[in-house]
Amino acid sequence: MLSVLKHPLADHMITHLRDRKTKPATFRTLAYQLTLMLAIDATRDLATEEKAVETPLEPTTGRILSAQPIVVVAILRAGVSMVQPFLDIFPDVSVGYVGLERDHTTAVARNYYCKLPPLAGRRVFVVDPMLATGGSAAQAIDVVKQNGAVAPRLVCIIAAPEGVAEVARHHPDASVHVAVLDRALNERKYILPGLGDFGDRLYGT
Ligand code: PRP
Ligand code: URA
Image 1 (cartoon, helix red, strand yellow):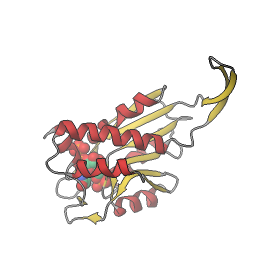
Image 2 (cartoon, rainbow, N blue to C red):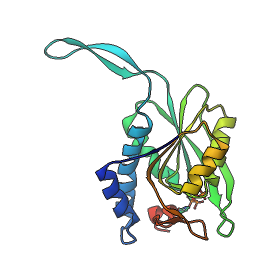
Image 3 (tube, helix red, strand yellow):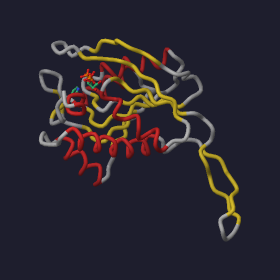
Image 4 (cartoon, rainbow, N blue to C red):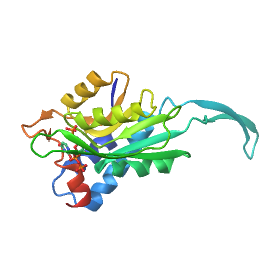
């Protein structure tokens, strides 16, 4: 399942994120704000339960989040930019990291690090801003499943159709939430129109 954010504010922020003149500080702020919107979209079916409260005027019943813990697994490096928005809006979040780096010539991702909290019985969100060939995301989802995650969700800012198809082929149970679906990959496996190398733009490297 693919879910694409449809909101004028998301369009506005993505356009500024794409702009080559956008500096790292603004880039980081835009990535934070877009991830907040994505986090809300990707969690719209979280379980809730009834709770009685008293307003200053009268008793009423509302709903609160049920106790199922959330885990955010960031794909290093660029995925780190998407962790804080989840931490800021959800009360109980654990964080894991999977280090994956694409080879500059083959675009095949190499796994160099993994540190995960317990995943069984938890709602797991794998976060990485760029879904290009889908190789990194498919590997990261493999890793979280091997560690107990069931039907993890992938949250990305920009996706290419090739990456969405690759993740669906390997992980038909994983839903994918993106802010925008771009046109295609170029011959070097960069997303078009995209925004270039997310990690480089985030960290000024
Ligand atoms: C980028 C991006 C994804 C990956 C996407 O990371 O953050 O992890 O490329 O490409 P794929 O879908 O073709 O696998 P990169 O490997 O450049 O590492 P970095 O975040 O450390 O810069
Ligand atoms: N990784 C990026 O950071 N950008 C792309 O366009 C593709 C992979």
